[in-house]
Structures are given as C-alpha cells and as structure tokens.
Image 1 (cartoon, rainbow, N blue to C red):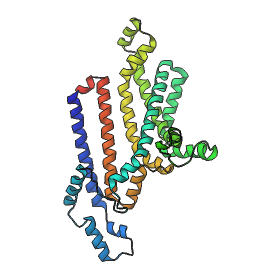
Image 2 (cartoon, rainbow, N blue to C red; image 1 turned 45 degrees about the vertical axis):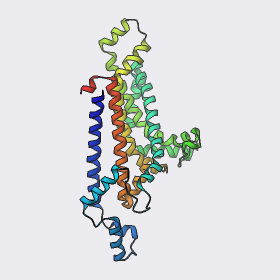
Image 3 (cartoon, rainbow, N blue to C red; image 1 turned 180 degrees about the vertical axis):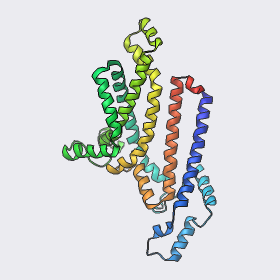
Image 4 (cartoon, helix red, strand yellow; image 1 turned 120 degrees about the vertical axis):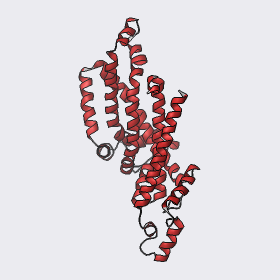
Length: 313
C-alpha cells in the first residue's frame, strides 16, 4: 500500500510540474502590452517602459520562469499586477467559498446517488426507468441553464432562497447552508443522475455474481448482503465518476459563482483572465491542479483499499 501511495504521489507531482510549466509559457507568451493595460492609455511611453522593467517583463522568459518556480516552491506566487496583493492571500481569502460549494455538492451527490442507485438496482421497475430519464435530461441541460432556471423559479418568483450572496459558515450553519442551496442544486442535479446511474449499473452486475448467491445461501440478510458486500464491491465505479464530477465542479464553479455572485476562486479566476493578471492566474491554475491531484490521490487510495487488485493495476 505504501508503494502504491508513493507511485500515485510521484505521478501527481510530475503532472503538477508539467501543467504549471506549460501554463506559464502559454500565458506569458500570449500576454501583450501588460504595462499599458495596467497604467491605462494616458500613461507615457517612459512610464510604460518603467512599469515593464518593474514587472520583470523585459527579462528573458526562461529567467522569469525559474524566478517564478523558485518562489512557488516556497509558497510565494508573487503579487497581483493590478492590486499588489499577494497572490496566495487572494486565493486563501476566497478558497473557503469555493471549497464550501464543491465539497457540499460532492457530499449531497454521494449520499443521494447511493440512495437512488441502490433503490433503482434493487426495485427496478418505474424507479429504474425514471432514473434513466433523469440521467439523460440531467446530462443534457448545462449547469448555467439549470442555475438560471433555479434562480428564476425559487428565488425571483417564489422567494424561497436568496438569488445572490454568500454567508460564511462562521455566521451559522443554517445561514451558510441556506445561501448555498441553489448553487449546490445547480451543480448537483446532473452529477447525482449520472453517479446514481453508474452505481445502479455496477450493483446490477454484482447482484448477478455467484458470490452474492453464496452469501445469501449462508443465511445473511438481504440488507447485509447489499450494504456490506455488494455496495462495497460497487463503490469503486461510483468513486471514480464522483471524482470526475468533483473536477468538473471546480470548472463549473467559475460560472456558478458568477451567476450567484459568490466571492470564490472561480470568480477570481474569471476576473484575472479578463484583465490579464498573470501572477494571479498562475496561482489559481496551480491551486486547481493541486486540488485535482489531491482528490485523485484520495480516490485512488480508497479504491485500492476497497479493491486490492487496483493497487497492482
């Protein structure tokens, strides 16, 4: 298990290095007139040249990359070109909002997917057919369309939930969950449908196995067979697609945070890309890749624990 962990960790570090390197060169090669954008059109050529030197943009790009990499390895991602605020501080300030949104959505998705998937696999009939229809509809409707529909119906027309805004968890668990209800629903609907579908298919396959009939012949209750053995054997498939949805939620958070005016990292990334704030954008990219690597590592460890054969694979 330790060797399994080390291999996964090493591959994650390699991915982080490659992605951050490619992102740095692509972003800085594509950036033009940065100093002019920061100072505005009224700035003189001398001021623009001074700002270019101040930002280090007159240095070779390879030299700039190694300067950035050296700082990043110590946790220093530089400062924003437009606000002069440290990049790491900007991300950490908004990180709780995005993590609250994505983690809460993942928990809701996991719980409801297991309930719906197991029920559909065991009961079949109308419940199974309904799940099939919801799965197709959920995947077909984009998240931003779902978000706009939820805001229109439940916030503007019915007034049950706030249309915009975020309440920190420090203000209370109730107000925090209340402010995130619609954003979480917008992200979770399609994820629940497809994850439950995966769990349902995996459980139907497992229920037809000989070892399940053997367990029942030994006198184990149907509940124990389902939740202790069959569900555990089906869990790796559900965990894999759930991890993919988690990654998709990070990208979807950019749009969802914009619609619901949530001050998260996704909203910060959108602002940085619009104004061309390269240090801030690089910090966000590293943060996203790091979160993805950590999630994939945790999922690999869980799958390896549930299914020892996966460690060999």
